[in-house]
Image 1 (cartoon, rainbow, N blue to C red):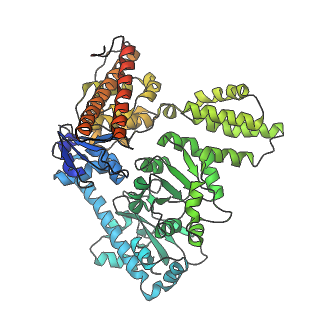
Image 2 (tube, rainbow, N blue to C red):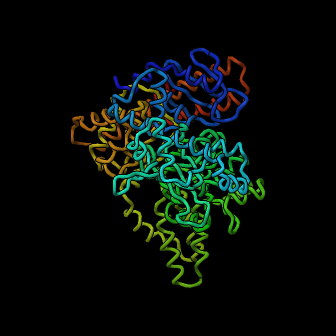
Image 3 (cartoon, rainbow, N blue to C red):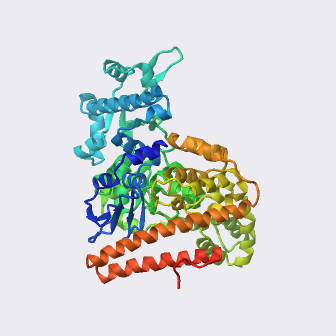
Amino acid sequence: MSVIDEVKQRTDIVEVIGQYTSLAKAGRTFRGLCPFHSEKHPSFFVYPDQQSWHCFGACNTGGDVFSFIMKKEGFDFGEALRLLAERAGIALVSRFEPEAKGKEKERLYQVNQAAAEYFHHFLNSPAGEKARSYLAGRGLTLETVTTFQLGFSPNSWEALKQHLIDAGYSEDEMIAAGLLVAAEDNKTHDRFRNRLMFPIFDSRGRVTGFGARVLDESLPKYVNSPQTPVFDKSGSLYGINLAHKAIPQQDTAIIVEGYMDVIVAHQHGFPNVVAPMGTAITEKHVSTLKRLTKNMVLALDADAAGEEAMLRCASYENTIGAEVKVIILPEGKDPDDVIREDAQAWPNLLERALPVIDYTFDIVTSRLDLSLARDKSLAAERLLPVIAQMKDTVRQAHYLQKLARLLRVSEARLEVTLNRLMPGRRAGEAGRETAASALRPLLSSPVEEYCLALLLQHPELKARCRDLPPEYFENSENREVFLAYQQAEDVKLIREELDAAVREHFDSILGKSLLSNQMEQRYSGCVARLQEKFLRNLEIKRAEVRALEAEAGGTAAELAKLEEQGIEISLQLGELFARKGHRKPGAG
């Protein structure tokens, strides 16, 4: 038995979900108000026999206990596994990494927390007066300063070091955490001196590192902790510890540029705002946020937002499977300025946010004279690669038409160039698919594993997986492998991207012995079987819920919606059986 199945076996999904929403028994199921959206009539169901849940309301999605925690807490799979394992009394550290390494990481979190408390305390000392004045001048309240645990590092080479030594931490631990710098003479000194301190928290509220700002004109203005075993600058989001619950509640994540932008937004009642460590937004940031929402809005300064839009907009949208938008800020204003001057202006700007690709078109064409042949060519040269990256063929056609109208050239001519660009896309990008949030119960499935083995062992099938939804993989381990496969450019790179708990399972799938003929037919058969199983399970659940609604006197609208869902499922099953050459069992 895998550790994932062991955690599932020792976890009561009703008890876990019951901590987030009140559940009442309804036949063989439990029902309650959906914890992911507002509703008056309960449309959220938990199935103890299958250890799964499903919302038949606005979410129209479901999953297992792991997917619930991932969606509710904003965790990745590994974090959800560790949380549930801890609740179940199952130790994971010794299984997946040397015990010493696990303890080392825990010590780094602890020493960072101790440093954060020291800096926060020092902010209230006489030496912190300048920092306090700066924060007051930016309009921050004492409550906000405490919430974000802002601090001040003394103008000393060894004050923090001595404090942490007295607290029981070693210099090696402080170096590993990035708090000390080792000089050439083997002496060490504090990294952060005479700076306003911004502790960086992960989504679980652990201090992973620090950002630090000078209070004079010296350079660099900002410095961050170096890369450490617990701090990854390219993947960290400032404010995520406070925003990870607000983002799914508001179904929108707003990305700003600076620490103060985040802090001021939260203070004024906009808690769904986060910031990267610098202006560059990475796939890691997007992957973190897409577990919380598909709606992402950029609110960077004009130059940064423009650069992001041109270089990465289609990539962002492909990753989250939805349209990304850009807030157009007033000239020379940061989000911090806008909100402090007029808090109501912020939601107004958000309402007028532009789709990022429309914004890309605007900033590219605004710098050109489209009456000139040369500038028309430049516009096509810059915008066609953006269109070529799009997976959604309807949106791709829309923007190709838009470009043709702007340039006043035939769409067919642009399409010739576009088609030349399409094969040049990286194999990994061509094979990626949106990671769906609907995950399924933990059930062993040889068909799932066989399907994965075909994909992993036969690269020529990569393009075929674009239409295979992740929710067809009901086993959590198989689903994690498939999601990693979709995003990887090379099978050899997948293993390192997987949580340690899944690697043994990945190795067993990769090592399966397969026949080497008719791979495409075998793969098609696997996909059809997975789809049939998925639809049948959904059909059964929907029928159970409709029966309960009818028995409880559900409204006509609620019953009609469930009936509509049932008809849609039946149609999909009918199409599936038609493709397989026989009718759905029970059909008249």
